[in-house]
Image (cartoon, rainbow, N blue to C red):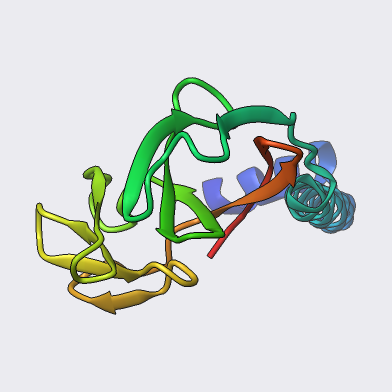
Length: 161
């Protein structure tokens, strides 16, 4: 008997190859199943976060505080989220995130052009709906939902573009 034959005989005696293959298949299937479940739970959590999000309501201005063609900066839903409130026409108030969707530069209202512009890279957004009209921004500006309650203009939510 050669040395190689002796080693093979010892391996067979102390190490059951069939049992090891079966165990590794079970282990792999168990890992695959648990990993898949974790991925599904994570995806479901991510999807429901956007659907179930509730926003506080805050008064952002009073009707008449902003002249026609004017604008005001405010924060919503948190202090770290700058927004812009516009009054393009007599009875029209609109609000958007003030952060350009390209490189997070601040945007400004240009009433003479009826545009929201980003001076960093020439981005331009529609006043009507926040959609991209020019430049490199990849997405519309998130719109702040407003309600008029008497003379108060109240922010009630955020609609992603």
